[in-house]
Length: 284
Picture 1 (cartoon, rainbow, N blue to C red):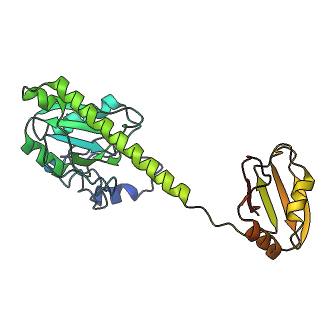
Picture 2: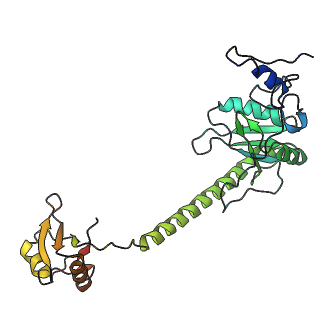
Picture 3: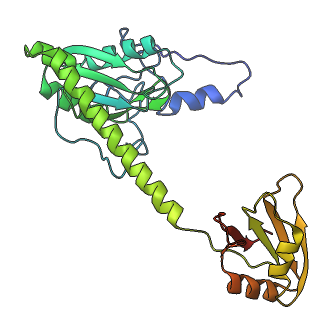
């Protein structure tokens, strides 16, 4: 049988001979005709004539340390890391052609939403066929990307329908589980944000103090009366675009630190029920 290979006139003369002798080149018959061109044949259909074994670098990684892959066998397989640039219908046809070599496939669902794109579900009629496909298709190169295969945590609608179950109530139960999981995620995110808010960044000392939350009718004399009593006082500077903030400058950084230590981070400028003025070091 004659070998085939596309050659380019721009290749060096020895390229064709090197390609024919290498194990990663086509030197034998083409793959079976029912597989799309972008597919490599599955492990039980490979020969060294036209497809080498997958390298060991294509090992699936855990998605998240708090949610490891499901290892309980199931008729439904969850696929991720699919090529997002390929048409979902093309991906679905390729997946069906690939997994039907292991047994009867009830359904293939390729997700194309923004949150779920690159993922799919394949439902087998037999759990034994799903286990075999899970083992052999792991890391399979599909449209230029290795496919990561896991067992689905929940049964599919096709499996429930085949067993004679109520698909409507099962969908409602699945929606409730999803909503509860999203609510738990929001609660954990809120707790994390509250914890981060309690941890304040340490202030870097500066010879300029930053005042925030000043009353609208405050006068320069009121601020000078408070801050001029401390050693090293230079001046009070206003911010024209924000009348509720001001800067107080001292001659040295140590004098500013001493003033802030004496007054604290909150200053009751007046006896009325006004909000206290915040005192901090100006950012460099």
